Amino acid sequence: MPGPEHELTARTFDSIIKQKITDGGQEALIQHMGSTQYDGTYNAKEADASFKPLRARPGRLDWPTVILEVGVSEKPRRSSLDAKWWIENSGGAIRVVLLFFVNLSRKTIRIEMWKKDTIDNPQHTRDHNQQEVTGPTLKQTINITPTGITGAPLVLSFRDIFLRRRKKRRGENNYIITEDDIQKFYNLVWLPDVTSESESSAEEDQSSHSSDNYVVD
Image (cartoon, rainbow, N blue to C red; front, side):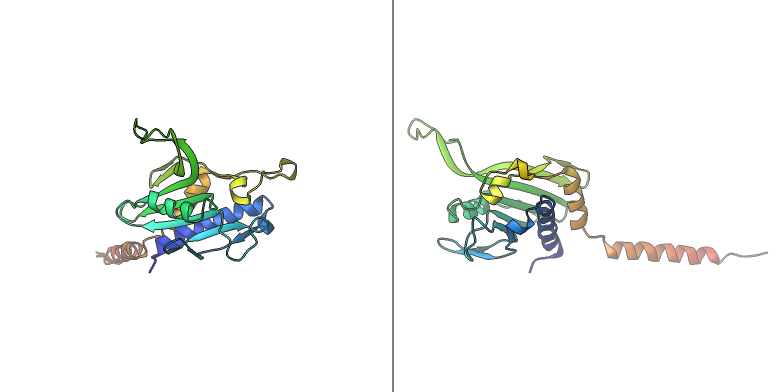
């Protein structure tokens, strides 16, 4: 069963994206699919949060364009396999995969944005002379630690979400999740350690009571 860090990561970032879309005036154009399960070629997979455009994909079983998936582990997960599943099983219908890796002991979060893209073939040889390959590609990484953030901001393309070009005369723009947004997100994920605070408060009370037991000549 998912722990609090898993749920807080998914729900908090989901809320940030929703708010950005609402602020842009497109809340009526998007459908929040939550943790819907999607069927792949050989198995099914459940998102932690997902979005799809109502006009471009009105069908009940239509794939979303944006997927959020959270992993909470002490060891790095094989992120490329997660991104590959979503992008390949959807036939490229999913335009953005956001993967979140939460390290409990270090209190760090890594955000990876994956898209389908054509890049130079890293395995290009004389025998395999295909110069370019198309597939899941890591486009951006943001690392969040207790001491700072690297890799921000995160920019979500309007076209990736709604499957059409943005119309500037309508005020449509890409959605920018700023470093400040990401810092607030991080602060909401890590709940205060109530046990430690209680122990500290108890120690203070005990110290206070001890100081009251003074001797008056």
